[in-house]
Image (cartoon, rainbow, N blue to C red; front, side):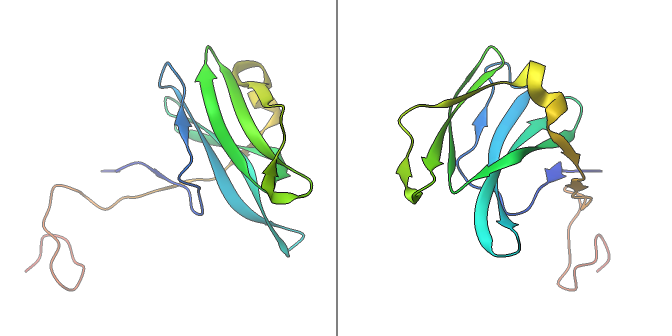
Length: 124
């Protein structure tokens, strides 16, 4: 039994599409091994696949996700404290093929059985 996809280092600033098929979530990653930046993940809940943007910004904040169009507030090149006045708009249905499919783990811990102190499921 699975309890869903697991994707590490995600921001709590996520947004569901109006049809609940896609989840837009920023993920913290290291660029060039040094700089902590965010890339955009699009989770296709129906297909259980996760797609990652090739672009990164200091900060990504999803604002609106209707009719397949995702609006993002993004930081300026000056740093994390300055947001660009214009929003980045992505037509998810037509641009998802430009994103990179990334592996995502599934949490396989059964949720309907008791877990004892040693972490074993159902054995006491």
